[in-house]
Length: 141
Image (tube, rainbow, N blue to C red; front, top):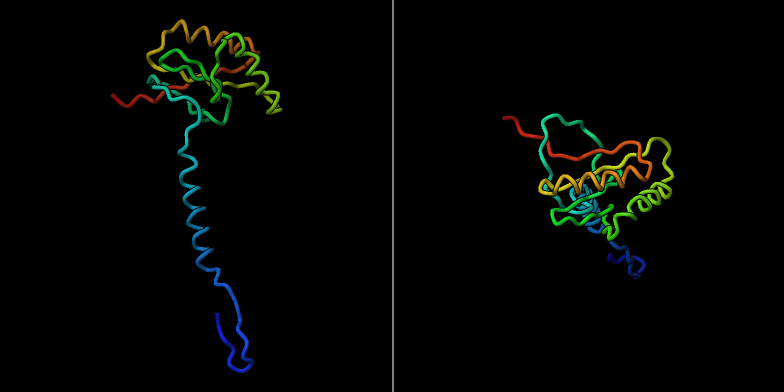
């Protein structure tokens, strides 16, 4: 606040510079932290030598199979595996995305192979054209 000596009235002008500094710092924090937030279930992925870079989970609809055998579509638990094709179809209807239908499958390294194949069959029942299996890139031997 400043006082004008000539007119004997007080001028009230808020100093917004510190407020702008705080907002910019918060913006930078959110920009740095947001990409690190992982959606969906946590699984330990198997390693593979020959991998192709694909979109990250979160950019495409993703099905997760945890070590315990629990199945998640995005972050929603799938109690009945027979409902998975309907959930996938609803997701694509919401997205209204043109082009081929792609779904990613992220299964824990310790899950039995039969369970993975069973889930893959249910995903294909939703008329999915491309099914991507997510693995970790194997470090050089």
